[in-house]
Image (spheres, helix red, strand yellow):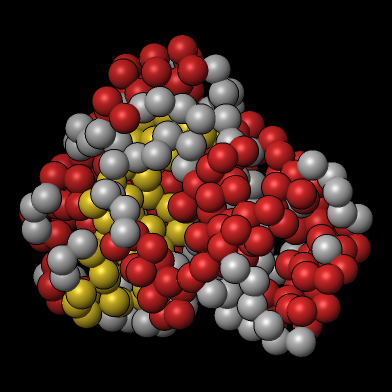
Length: 328
């Protein structure tokens, strides 16, 4: 590690295989917490390369508890986090709306590190069970259209990194990796990223995969469609600027999608929205994101997906998915 750190501090890059090996060595406990923290810090001070990101991704997928869900043709909806916006749990709510619309969802998530409340925090507070038992997960997706893949249960090799990330309290390259290392290897992916540089990296890596994908960066700095600004969306064959007007919506005030600064507040907002009692701005934001996920999975237009998402939310189908999941 010392040699690699010296090279990185001198603004050198490491190759794909070396990046992979460093992460494998971290998982084996070969490095001290101080060395790991220094390694993470380097990537807060300079951009990660495609080769480095690919190497880190390959290592985590090789080390993870794999889940063979390829027959379900599922989608994952998640963001990198790290945008510093403290919105409510938009992608998590959108996942249940997507499942309510009949699209199977393998939701990969974790506790908040760079935010006050990650998807796992709010789902746990609602009574959702976390497990890596394959039979349970298959029963979950077959009966509710969704299963929750709580990252620490599927990436046990990263136990040496978790407390360091928590102590640092800021985004690291693990934020970029999260959406890429879903152990179910979903066929479809909607992923939000916190800046245009990460969008470029994701686009390059996803082009080389067989996924159907939509990568989103909201130009106001959000890692999802916020409706507060225009957004850039890159998919398999298109690259476009999205505007709220594309869905017949107005631009909204950022305060209307603030999620509070506690798990309790985040859970209250989550329950209100999924029960159909959210504000119009909250409802439209989750339906815009779910609509894009549905469009990605069904290969239809975003507008068509948006209408399906609204029906899922307002008919109570999304709420039924959550209720079934909690009672499973």
